[in-house]
Image (cartoon, rainbow, N blue to C red; front, side, top):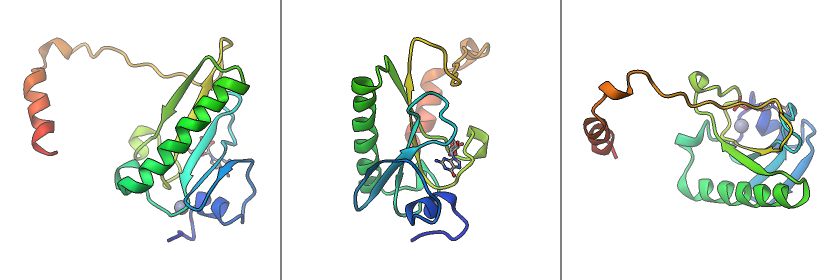
Length: 140
Ligand code: 5GP
Ligand code: ZN
């Protein structure tokens, strides 16, 4: 199903142009308009799912397979030294387009516009990691 007000559904339906990197029956990959780093690519299922958490497993596998291949290609042909694979879920995590997508962001020696910092939580030493792990485990 497509969503009328979804920009990525419009890209899938070719109502909005995009620089396509890959396409098959289920998956489309195209360059992110921001080009945070050169080659920044988005991989999306052609069907509309809101985000990573609501996407069926078989669709997820196809999207991740394409993301892996694009990462490998970017290392090979763009001279990228590394890749960040990222999917934002909900606005609190930075999601701005609510059609599941995986960012494939090539990283070079030169600084691009992408930064990701995982700072140590100053409260980490006060947390019980086994209790926290158990809480998550219960919900699986
Ligand atoms: P999010 O913030 O949801 O994780 O990522 C959405 C991404 O979609 C952003 O990086 C943004 O640059 C990209 N984007 C938004 N609109 C368009 C568009 O019309 N065309 C393309 N190619 N990328 C878009
Ligand atoms: Zn959509």
